[in-house]
Image 1: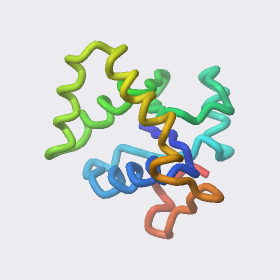
Image 2: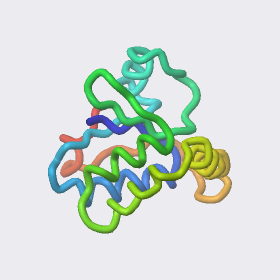
Image 3: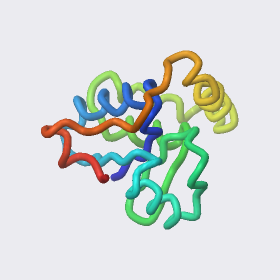
Image 4: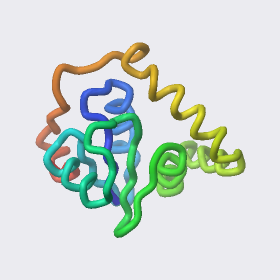
Length: 129
């Protein structure tokens, strides 16, 4: 499974770090939406190559965005993060409204980097560049 994320967003990078620590099954790979690999995957699925307001989860030939992606990611984690799956019982329009509210204000609240993160040597195998 590939998680596409906004590489300059501090909030998004926090969640990537969170997932890296909890990916005990070693099933996630990561790519910044702005990276060459991220852009290639966006084009493959006919998604915007300039709108970086959502996590995108790619699993084989399908992709999910916004709250659906978050819930699917949580399903593959153990412990308390799995509680996010309960959100599936909320209507999608409510879940995505909350997601969009955070996404729209993420730079204002959490800040932004000058450039995309560069994975450490230990993380390198988990990132598509």
